[in-house]
Amino acid sequence: MGGNNFARGFQELVVYRKSREMAGGIFALSRAFPREELYALTDQLRRSSRSVGAQIAEAWAKRRYPAHFISKLTDSDGERNETVHWLGVAADCGYVSGSDTASLYSLLDEIGRMLRRMIESADDFSVVPSVREEPMPYGSLSDFFVPDTL
Image 1 (cartoon, rainbow, N blue to C red):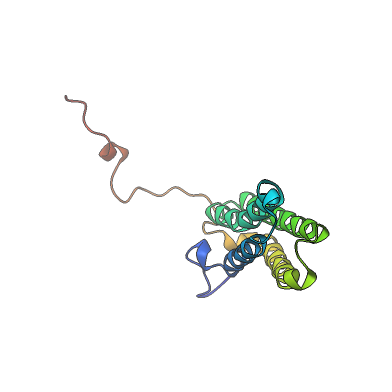
Image 2: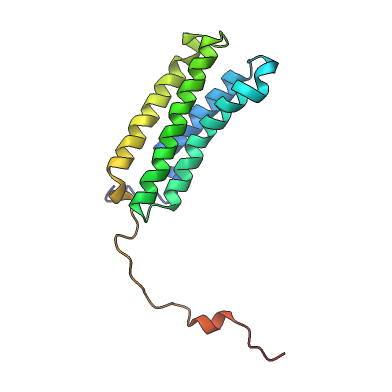
């Protein structure tokens, strides 16, 4: 990341936007699953697909610490792989066809490649390259406490 290409929040990350698109596609596709799968396959597939973006959001909050950032992105990639698995199970059960899932598999693959690139360049996402203490711009800690005079 360099120049003016810095995201101000996780919502601006292309990979996050694609994860939301994928989760929406999974939701729409799974609406046609049999009712008896509601608390099994449907729930698992929806949960894992939604977790991909949630893990990216958590990673963003931990980007100051590359090891934590990488860990959350790895969790996101794990959820992505779980989504691929459950989508395959849905196909095995005959709930979806290859034509139904082709664009989702493609999107899941793209998200995986983007997550791996982020993991490989985790230091580029760090907003604070080193830890340092700076004086508080609003005064001292005593400014936060009410005097005990009551």
